[in-house]
Image 1 (cartoon, rainbow, N blue to C red):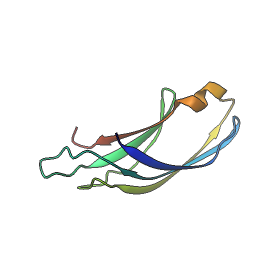
Image 2 (image 1 turned 45 degrees about the vertical axis):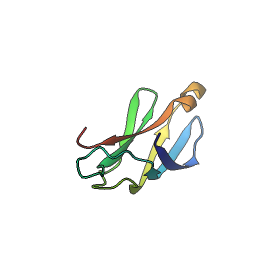
Image 3 (image 1 turned 135 degrees about the horizontal axis):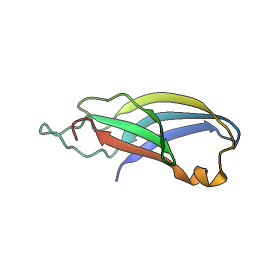
Image 4 (image 1 turned 120 degrees about the vertical axis):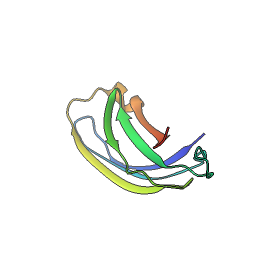
Length: 91
C-alpha cells in the first residue's frame, strides 16, 4: 500500500479547488536498481485533473505539486471520487 500526502486547501461544490500533492511514502521498488521513478495522477470521477513530474530513482518522492481549478456545479457524490494514484514511469 502506498501513502500519498495531500493538502486539500479548499473545496466547495461551486468554487475553486486547490490541491497540493506533497509527497508519497511506501512506494514499491520496481526498477532493477531497487528504486522507482514515481509520479502521481489526480482524478475526479473519470477526469484526470493533473499529473506530477516524475521523481527519478526514489521510493520517497517529494513533488509539492500545486493544482487549482474552478468547479462548476459539481455533484456532491464526486467528492467521494477524488483519487490519487502513484505509478512508475517505466511500468
